Image 1: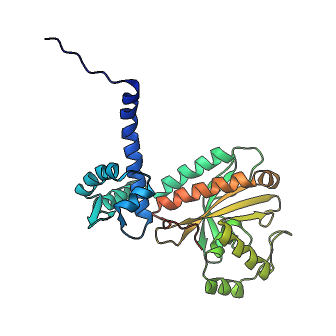
Image 2 (image 1 turned 90 degrees about the horizontal axis):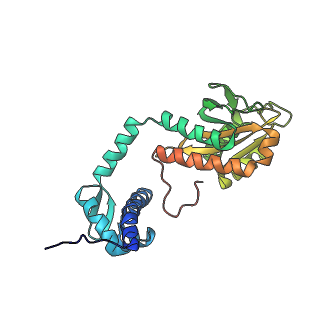
Image 3 (image 1 turned 45 degrees about the vertical axis):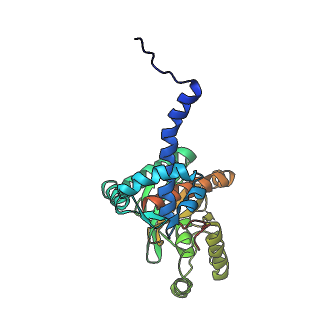
Length: 274
């Protein structure tokens, strides 16, 4: 008796090839969704949210539930203990500093500009990490240097996410001494600028700390929703003006990556943090 090996047509083979990656993508989307949502979700809700038929979704949910990556209560699903153990292992073995430097290098490669990470120290910000632009004409900043909150891109981000009481206290005790002729020292003008930063999610300064330099700052959040720091792109004034839209987009994307690395998740449907 002769036997022939069954052969698949091109379409069938392509379907099999793509099914694995598609399933993996759906599993990752599932984890991301449940991590951002602060409640349990039903099969129907999950199906709609990740655009996956219920029958296909159940095939993924069963083994994830059996292994403890997900938990099920009646028809509702939520993250299980195994996924938290998995996340903790990542955080333990891959410290934030290494993630930070990797993301900062990516931004330098994308924009060709200097990138800084700043943390708050009372009434000032400190540049805790700096990667300079490779270009001959560039923004130069030393790691460890500090700047006043009110006239730096990173400092304005810090103020934008203060409570109203904290902001009032800051202005009451701070002398708004200009660093350059362009430094804004009017309290009402600064309050308006801070309010705008809350709405847009980024700060923009031009010649306020250095007369010939500009900065674009964006917030980085910890898992608890509080600020971890601010990511800043610093550039010569003219280049910054020409490339503002692109630089802000790059900074926002990088800051979102860093916030997620720290465990921060915005709620499903949330458009911003105010």
